[in-house]
Length: 172
Image 1 (tube, rainbow, N blue to C red):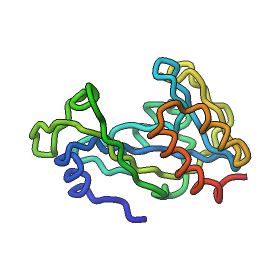
Image 2: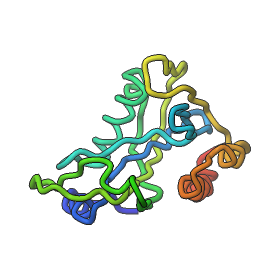
Image 3: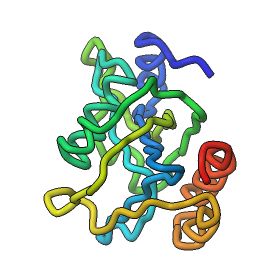
Image 4: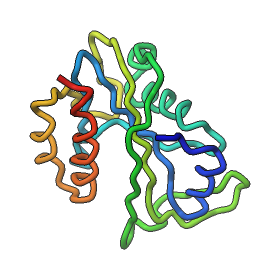
């Protein structure tokens, strides 16, 4: 799968979609899943791609910001884009965040566009004390389907299940 160019990323913004890099971080045949209590969501760590930012640079920046420098330093190998998806908002969520194109034009944010990357980590002890996450667990292939039952948002659950099927070949 080809990584979108900066121009393609900006076209997504013009269409009202906030681009996001999502980290499917693999260590010893398991993938990292995080939990945020305030949103009651289990999912892969992720974050927005800044204007004029390469999606892979955004991936490294976001994983380091979200999970700390130790995790950031532990990432290795070339990230592989394995899946893309979009979720459109409804109701009050439309326009809930400011979104601008690369030339500074304000756009009504109507959804998000996700770029799911697999990346390897050799971190031994992941500490999430100073992160936004309440829990972080390494999930084996056998337990992937269990996590899907914990995701209450239906569009996120569908997204998780699709990505999980792709991840199975990378996990033990």
